[in-house]
Amino acid sequence: MYRLQNIFAILNFLIIFHTISGAEEHCDSMTEIYDPDQLKCVLKVGSSCLSQEEKCAPGSHCVVAIDGIKRCSCFGAKSKSENGTCLLSNNEFCGSSLLKQCDFEQGLVCKQGYCSCKYGQFQRFNITLEKCVSTVPGPCNNFTKCVENAHCSENLETFQQCVCSQGFIAVGGHCQLDYGEKCEYIHNYRGSHYNFNSFTCDTAAPLKCIDGICQCENLEEYDTNMKICRGLVGTVCSLKNEEYCTENGECGMRRDRHLFPRRGQLDGFCKCKTGSSANSKKRCVR
Ligand SMILES: *[C@@H]1O[C@H](CO)[C@@H](O)[C@H](O)[C@H]1NC(C)=O
Ligand SMILES: *[C@@H]1O[C@H](CO)[C@@H](O)[C@H](O)[C@H]1NC(C)=O
Ligand SMILES: *[C@@H]1O[C@H](CO)[C@@H](O)[C@H](O)[C@H]1NC(C)=O
Image (cartoon, rainbow, N blue to C red):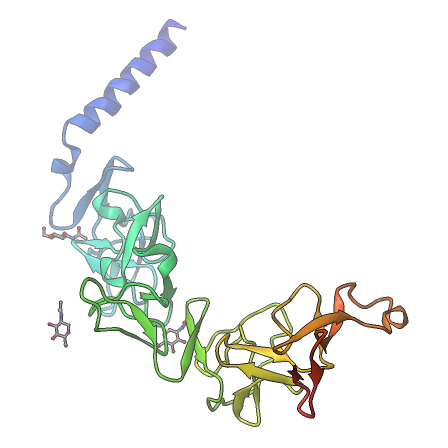
């Protein structure tokens, strides 16, 4: 027991000694760098190494470089290095030490131990660009770009903001084709996944790409003020969505509901409110 305590005391002393003695001074400044997390010298990025086992700086490994010599190289072909360390990309573990810095040029900062976009919820990390881009209406400047089909508004004095370009409308921070715009192909959004891209019609309205134009489905009309598709008289609707039916209309219970017991209990159809009646265009007029 006595001996065990002694060993602990010695170990403790060694660790403290190692930490306070400025162990970095023992590193070869040309090829090595001190890693305070591991309490030892590691090889800088670009230094020649002998084997996989040889200790390269965090985020790098020992591989054959372009010059045919084995060198510590950052993981990932595009990752950049600075001062002999690898700059970390999105979602990588980070910290305060020099060896665990996020790539600021990608718009990243260290938050709760992970590299993430500086403006958080107002940004997305674009893997292709390897940069954080701002969503609408996120902050932007010469350095921080906006998502596709958006640009940085220049008329604001205090700060600049991403806005959708002409012909696009913001949906969930992204810009989608507005009503009446030319669209390139049909997307079906009945599934669970929303695939935002430059040729998607406004999925919030929701508009469909029909005959190459973003428009509402048959038996619906577009409300330019509310920017939604509304059901004409006779269109199937949900009793939960009060705004859906055309002006002066409402979602009424289906009279034939008992014939469709498996249908949603909230299913109905658009009908005219009391005091108005349907015209030939299936709108409700008083
Ligand atoms: C690299 O070194 C320079 C000069 O010492 C310093 O200004 C810069 O912040 C360092 N880069 C990183 C990522 O720490
Ligand atoms: C990333 O940016 C490029 C260029 O603007 C764009 O084509 C691509 O769709 C973007 N990716 C995502 C996931 O937003
Ligand atoms: C941003 O870019 C514009 C045009 O290229 C330039 O006039 C302006 O000085 C830049 N602003 C900053 C802060 O770099």
